[in-house]
Image 1 (cartoon, rainbow, N blue to C red):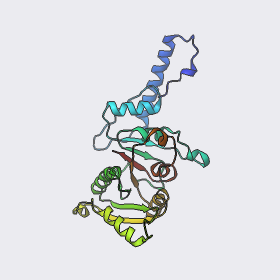
Image 2: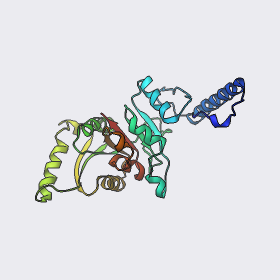
Image 3: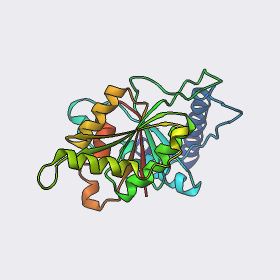
Image 4: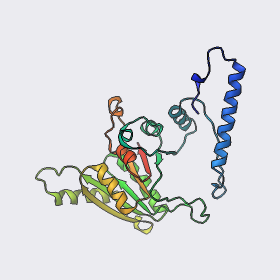
Length: 254
């Protein structure tokens, strides 16, 4: 909850300001309780917390303080130039979070069905995109774990932006397929279907296109640590997939 300092002149009485804060906090908690009605699965009950301060910083501080395992956030649909900006709360949290972040825009189809008490999660198709970095390998742990838990189809995707050396596409594809398959446990097929795939093109375009073609429920990506200059630029595959794609995106940082 952002603190509305500008709403109060310098002569405002402290008691009045305190009452306003209390009322805003109580109202926010009431709204949280209202929107989570009917979402208790297997006896799980949500905890309601209202923080005061700047939104991204409050979320990040809370996640560190409470040793949070996952942050789930909604992203707003955007059009035109706004879609290429880096100003949203979700993107700020994604850049700096120490734990994985699940960013959800209203998808073309839902994989969560709160009213289904038997199988509330229908996570059937997962795309894991890899550039073979250490961060990507860490993200694979999450993708594989989810796929095995929900008996999903897991597509392992690598995108060749440039074919090295002689331009031998077949050789480059064969090497990439081998790198995709090597980390997968031999018995993973007992719990999920694993499909390695290599495409040519720009990574973010191919990831988004594959998600549309396969009607993917989730995309899993690794996020590298970046310096101050990199964080000010909108150029990474992760951010483009987050902004331009329609599937939920789980981002994992080492």
